[in-house]
Length: 185
View (cartoon, rainbow, N blue to C red):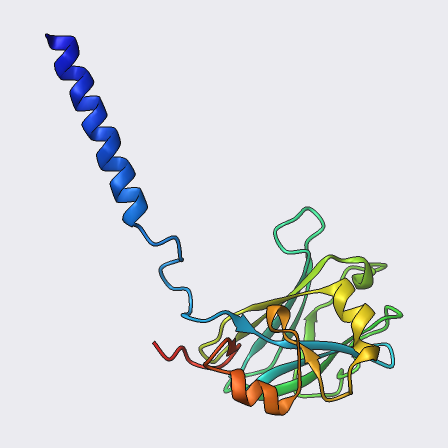
């Protein structure tokens, strides 16, 4: 009789755990309601960023290649308080040269390691500190391969594809959020 009672308790506990697990949302607690995106492209050998909408009060931009892997490496730009406005930024040269915007308001605080070839990375992720912002990620090979096939005003916005200013304006807050757009929910 004790075995039957214990077996029933175990079965009930298993059902309770399964029901609670099924009811739980798998989305992270503080994840935005729409996927965050930023635009990337390469023109004349320069990796370019477009935040899609202006980011005000930026004190740090972090560019991470192959995040979450053994090959992960990053470059960090900073600006003094109260921060600067960032919307478009020339990030890196494909020839391994220094940041093309070296004389801009953001200065390289942490350069990529000597000899690092970012064009061989699998992914690129961008985070912005200062304003409330979300990070975004793109595929490096896709950016390198497809940039020349799209007009200069179009950028690869991750899963959203190649978008120009009209498309970004139309889709922001509908199918994605630019990195500095507050979550509407």
